[in-house]
Amino acid sequence: MELHFTPPIDVFGKNNQSGFTMIEVLIAMALFMIGILSLTGLQATCISGNASARIQTEATAIGTQMVEQLRMLPEDHSDLDASGNPHELKRNGSRSYTIRWEITESASATDVEALKVTVIPDNRVNGIPVTISTMLAR
Image (tube, rainbow, N blue to C red; front, side, top):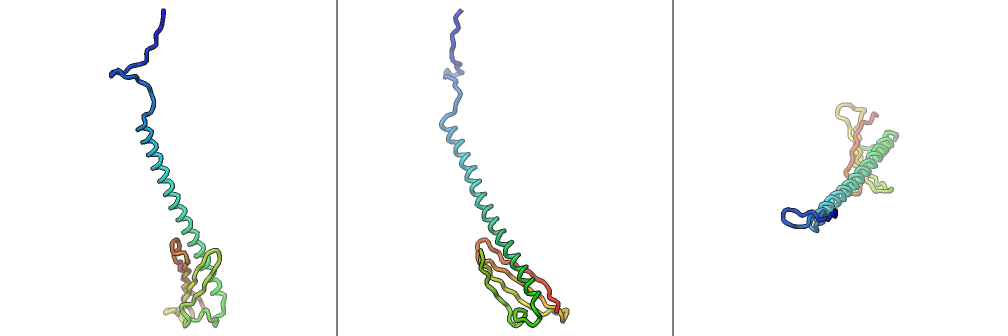
């Protein structure tokens, strides 16, 4: 008994072989590229957000440090004189910041002054000014 192999034939009489057509490959590549480009955009957004958070953290630390330095000054120091408002200091390190502070007399108590320290990052793209307010007892 002899066996003969005949390839499977579909209803229309064509050879039914499995594989991908060029259109299917192009569509798959297009979908893959859209996914990759979306991830690239997401990564750029994440990098910008991280840079902004780092600058905000540094500005907050600088502002807190400035508040502590001003609290340690004697009452008659020129940096605590309300007539010199706004006081300003430029800080250059790995990044540049402008530090401004204002001293105002408290309306409710005579021996208390309000201190407002604002740290402004020179990087205007990712930097948002940070303001720290506190009270100074005299």
